[in-house]
Amino acid sequence: MNNNNKSGLFVAIAIASWSTVASAFKIGLRHYTYFELILVSAIMAMLVFATVVTIQGKWKHLNYLGTKQWVGFALSGLLNPALYYIILFKSYDLLPAQIAQSINYFWPTLLTIMLAIFMRQSIPKFKYIGMLISFGGVVLISLGTGGIAGVSLSGTGIALAFLSAFLWAMFWILNQRNKNTDSMVALFLNFMFGAVYLLIATLFVPTNLLSVSGLLSGVYVGMFEMAIPFIFFGMALKESKNPSLINQLCYLSPFISLFIIHFVVGETIYPTTYIGLGLIVSGIVLNEMIAKRKQLRFT
Image (cartoon, rainbow, N blue to C red; front, side, top):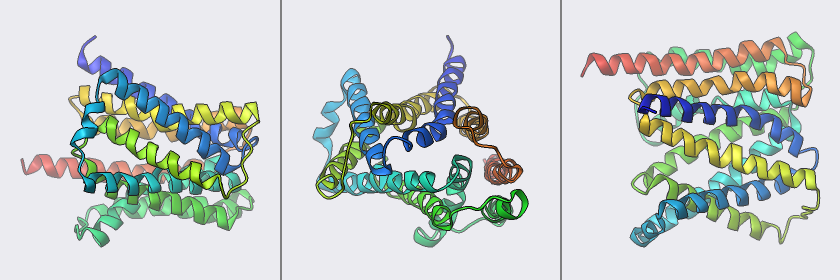
């Protein structure tokens, strides 16, 4: 199998995994609280990453980490998985899966804004077009669903979905400080610290993990949302000659997810969700395509 075929296979595994997790969230939340679900999921993901690090013989990389890097992973682990997934799962608890998922996909646009604010990176004028398109999609989903589809949405749930997108963008910025660390080791350390924080939180948060259905859902989420797709996505990027295409292919997953949400969870997919999600993803992809063309023009 050549590199392009390997890359296609790896990204297909990542897309298939991410396409199922919104439904898995909703099913898991029928049996577990949002805290119980993240606790099991984070521990499961940590174990998957630890297994991969062991197979790849990368434990020696820990010896090269300095104090600043350990502190960095301690902070990023608090942000993701601990805080990010607590907020995300709570938004799924309050909203239909299709709504929570769509608003969460707004994070690349938030990232652009945050880079401008916190990192003083100027926003190219052309990017405002894509950002406005994406923002229009979020507005349509958040506000238009009630007026057009006649559905009442939780304002708290919408705010938490926005907050989850903000936290993921913040994690992306913070994680750039750890970019020199091996990616698999970095993922393990993030989830190791996150799992430790969540285990400490069990001293204060009532927790009951006896539900078999909840446990299986948590294991599934840990494997197919937090671990396996990121492993295969990284492998796809490494094998591909066109990383930007790999990135864009991943935006197929929220659309595939809508069909799974409908048939597995039983949600009726609103017209505003299709249109709004289409606008969100179109704005993001448009900015990526224009940015690539401008980069090629000046190289």
